[in-house]
Length: 113
Image (tube, rainbow, N blue to C red):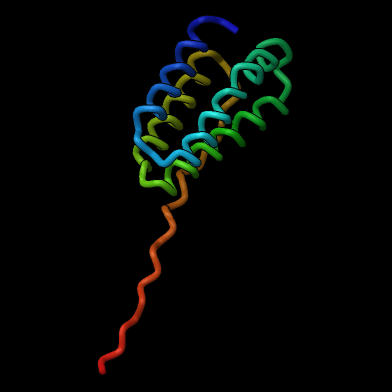
């Protein structure tokens, strides 16, 4: 894998590590990021759609974990960076849809006594 691609993925990892999100979702995101270099390497070698599909799945997992933990802006920034990276390199589009809104907190209806 070329150095520009490695630098871009490292920059995204740095953003996640600096975000201050809870440990469990952070580990999920970092685990997803660690899988991307091999997928991009195989994509560069073969251009098979299965690698793009797996990249999209991992980016979706990362976006959802960030969105669910109050980092929606970071989730969208990462999606934008990944989309731009694909465009610059001539990779197939990620076809990402807007992130789903964070789950609403349930309101407890109180009754007057």
